[in-house]
Length: 611
Image 1 (cartoon, helix red, strand yellow):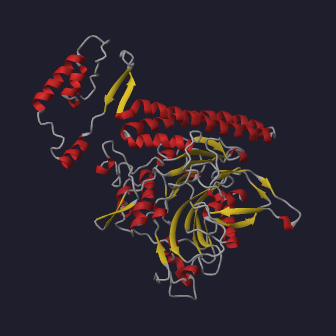
Image 2 (spheres, rainbow, N blue to C red):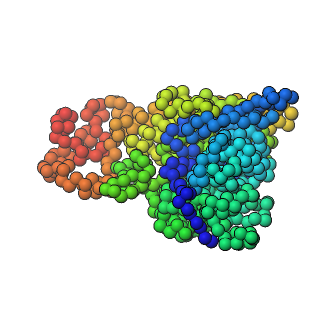
Image 3 (tube, rainbow, N blue to C red):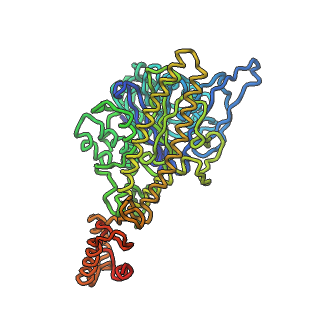
């Protein structure tokens, strides 16, 4: 393989791509219930978390001059791109699924820049939702996307798409790169079917390398996927007369060559998923050098066989990941603060004394707009097959509720249009009626207070909510199936719509109440819990002491600045006084101090105030 990279063409590794999305793909044979799943985090600081809804439509018109047109805008920045004819019939779409059990999600990898494609109308966001409105299966969706790009132009950079369907139960990864200003509209692409019984993932780094050319059951590609690279000097197999030597052509290596950023800030998220699920107990260690951005030749496989059949809750927990228990964990260094937070403020890339540094970029991140796990239940009637477990904001703190793909309405707490609809993101308008703000309130409270105390409580609460919704969903399924068997389609659709709206409303109200509970308990860095035998407040107040790890960091950084210079005398008096208080038998005294209170933190002044 010989790669030629003329100065005219630039390998673009954008920080915006490194800050973008994560996908996890589960085939039927890899799931506990034999059904495919796709998990998706859509990450951007200016993305307002909403559940987009496009109702079904019938646009047949005998007059070809009176064709209904659809306006197209960029999902990234709201730029108007043009309009295309609407399809004669469209399916109901809720979020990233439709009423036929098709799911499409994405991550952006950027890749090579081949110039601006003049007149391109479809960006990757519009491509997803228009395709969901027009397709039933993953294979059909791949061909629809290719046709749309070739016909109307592709206005985005390199993209990885995840596709799965109910009809065949197939799961695919499709990667595309714009043809740029080469004269042809659209994009070159390759799509690979994930083998049944396996899982895959992608996270802002192109992952398809070499691929078979004569296996249409498992691999599809555009006619010019190799030729585009050749004509732009990106690839030369030294034999233009034969394709026999093109077996070494690697889509990722040609169109999105791995860099330090691509490995460490992007593909490392896939490493985290595979490390947890691989049947190879040494997977994490084997590919750690790649995840760290050290050995970029040590590429991971495109898919792996998981070490167990995955439940819904297993996939949801993968989206909670902050690189815990790996070499990339960031909850133990000085940046984690006293409460072991895995989060960092500021940009992903930063500079000091002329040197470049970075923060880690895990799956769960504070700037997620929305997060979902799509279940495709192949055993269910088609209109009942797809369920989105949908949440907004940080995937590790966001509770999820179920939404049917055939639902004709969305809970007002979650509904909204996006930049792809020509509507600016309402990220500057605070509204307690919107789940995005309430879920941000819970997450940001955990970030800024006692993360290592609050996050476990949030995680437990999320699981309780999931269990409750699973029980309720089962009951609605039974009712909807009965209506389906009676050919009462309208009643069935109304039933699942009512439930989807009610579930969103219920969760929003419950999470707002939960924010209040957390605020009351952990305000002012305390931990205030119920204690009925304290008549002062029926509560107990504890102040969580620093961990030894943080004490060591603090003392190392400040020296004797916070040293108690008369420690022996003062602390002895303080401790003796407080022991006397705690041994007092009268519980009516307002001077009660719980035994658990760190008594060494009270000064003489505080002692005098108690007296």
